[in-house]
Amino acid sequence: MSESHHRRTTSNDSKASYPPPSPPSLTYHSSILPRSVPTPALVESVAGAAHYSGIRIEPEAQLKRRRSSHGEREVHSELKADHSRVLADLKELYCCRPTLEILDRLWRKDAIFEDPLSKCKGFDEYAAQWFAMPKLFSHSETTSSRVMSSTHTPNRLVFSQTQTYTTRFFKRKKAIESIIIVEMDENEKIIRLVDQWGGNDLPIRFGAQFLRVLNAKITPWLISIPKRPTS
Image (cartoon, rainbow, N blue to C red):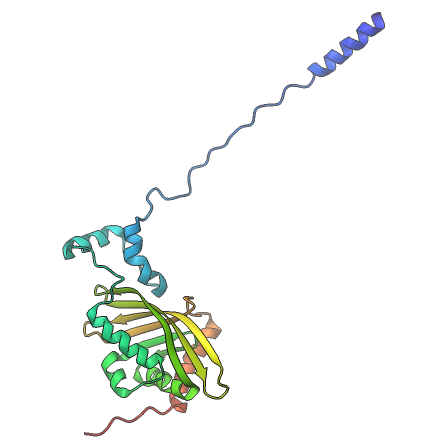
C-alpha cells in the first residue's frame, strides 16, 4: 500500500514540474501603406501618358489648381481636333508612305525619335529611318489603333497601335504592338516621339544605347532622302 502511494505521489509531482504553455503573443507593426491613396480621378488624368513616357507626374494639389483654372476637367481619352491630323500623318509614316511634305509639316527639325532599334536626333537621322521602311517592307498596315491620352497641357498624344509589316525579301509578316508617346510644341509639330514596343521601356544599358545611337548615325549613309525641289 505504501509502495502504491509512493508511485502515485511521484507521478503527480512529475506532472506538476511542467508549467502550462504560455498563450501566443501578437506583435503589431505599423502599416507600410501610405495614409493617402491616389484617387481614381487622379489616376485617370495622369497615368495614361506619364507612366509610359517616363515624364514626372505632377502632385495632386498642382493638378487640382490646374483643373480649377481651366474649369471642367479635360477629358484625356478624346482625340483633340489638332491631334487628329498628327495621328493621320503618323499613320502614313507607319504604313511606309513617307514624304518630305509630311515630315516638314509634322516634325520639327531638331526633333527626337526613339524606338528599341534607334535613337535619332535631328531631321537627317529620323527622316532616314522613315524612308528606310519602304525598302525593308513591301507592305505595312495598321490593324488596330486606340487613343489613350490627348491633352493640350502638356501638348501630348499617347496612343496604342498594332502594325503588321510584310518583309520585302522573305514575305514574312510581323505584327508589332506598341505604345507611342508624341510630344508637340505650340504649333503642333513633333519635338519627341517614343515608340515602345509591347509597352516596354526602351533599352538604356550601355551596349544597347550605343547600338541604337549607332543605327541612327549609320542609316543616313545607307538610305538616300529625296531632295527638295529647288525654287
